[in-house]
Length: 124
Picture 1 (tube, rainbow, N blue to C red):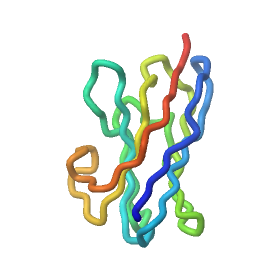
Picture 2: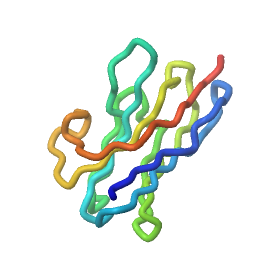
Picture 3: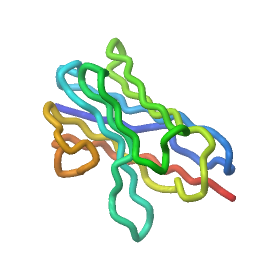
């Protein structure tokens, strides 16, 4: 079975850091692109970051550029999202998603596999 497990969320003060992990199993990790999405209460799910299967292409939504970094450890079948200089507006449930072919990297419908989210709360 394909599984994606997001972890690493928690409560942090504004300006702090967290590292989210997305552990994948049940598919050939190297062949899949991974996206991070987030959903705040009352808001639509938003594409945050993306890394292609070859790690040659990455994407960040404008609001996190310069603060978040996505990386992949194919040996561990894990993608990381390092989040620095966190702001209260980063508060959301963060999800990772995977698909073998992604065109519009920030569109949730492009991804077939989804993991359960991890909650990030940034206090002011």
